[in-house]
Amino acid sequence: MEDSGINDEGNALNPGPQRPPRVPPVRLLGVWLLPFYYGWIIVAVVFVAEFVAGGVGTFAVPLFFEPMSEELGWTLTLMTGAITAQAIVYAGVSPFLGQALDRFGARPVMLFGTVFASVGLVLLGRVQEVWHFWLLYAGVGALGLHELGGFTGPVLITKWFVRLRGRAMGFVTMGTTLGAMVMTPVLGFLITTRGWRETWVLMGIMVITVMVSLTLLFVRKQPEDMGLQPDGEPSGNELVDEGLGSERNGEPDEVSWTLKEAMHTRTLWMIVVSMNLVGLSATLIVIHLVPFLTLQQGMSAQAASFVVSLRLAASSISRLVWGFAVDRFHIKHCLAVAFLSRAIHPLALILLPYPLNVTVLVVTSITGGGFQVLQPLAFANYYGRRHSGAIMGAMRPILTITSLLGPLFVSAVFDLTGTFNLGFLVAGGLGLLSVGVVLLANPPRKRDELSS
Image (tube, rainbow, N blue to C red; front, side, top):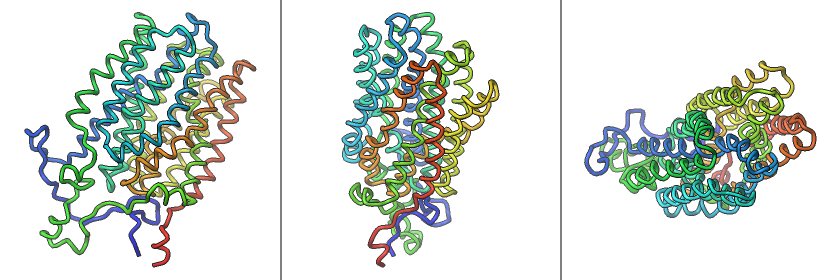
């Protein structure tokens, strides 16, 4: 029977001999001999990219809502329309982005994203009309920050790691929440002291200053381009030299599914449906938590930012928790626990009194904050790394449905009713339904495996 690379628990197999692997020597920048696998350099660079993208991306936007609306007279629904515009553009470019990552590698994609995001952020400081804001923010997110980290980073990690994929993904995605934690108070201070327009410009300068050199110097497409194997495993020749050739065929990779093959499996669509159902809960906590706390709970902006920081700290811990857990437990069970925690967030906020509601939000973020880890791992663990960019890119337009409609729905409900209750209740209910759906996502089997 052909090895699918996925065990019966839905995790990437742990291939290879039980002795520590001998990592082929690699020189960093052609000078320093690395005593460890170069993939961890990739992890460090992607961590910084996620830190930058998270610090100036979706987590930062709500900080600008109040000062921009006061000066320009825009409603919450109009402001949130920029998020929807970004989702529309992202859905259109994701399939092409995934194909580009598989074909050309991450370095040119990340460089393009860095330059585009930087220019767009600078121009956001000059907006006068709402359509300016929609157009520029859509470009910054969908054509800039996602290429820099949000989409590119996880795809790159899946190509460099198999056996240690979960923990590597956990480390890099911590950059998103840590970036938001660090940058939120910094941006709040800059908006107060320098104004929102200058703050957008400073964000753009930071992005290009930090990321261009790191990307050019350190990012590589895949380990094979450097004579390495995923996870730093020995090559086939080294295994033969050590008398281990019968244990491994020199290939530490999973069997990879093409996009066409993956789309014919029931599992793929179960994953996509469940992620869409829970997506509204995930999105509204990022976008509408601050407006909920300030406009409905009557909290000050400073107190609300403290709650956001606590939730982001818990979410950072969650990335590590799921990064290690997914290497040991069934991927669908990990997803189910994370989805349940996400569903609890909006329900707790509207059904429990303050401060109990905020306490439950923060505590359940420890298990509910790993969405960015588990989503790419679900596709990579089930369908392999070779075509991971194409598969994830093709699914992204479908996965953006709730990101496209959800924030506008919640904002419109608030503008009509003066409360977030109905929108949060719907989001929580859909999140609970997602738990049952994802539990149906069993590991796929290729036809030739079933017939052998």
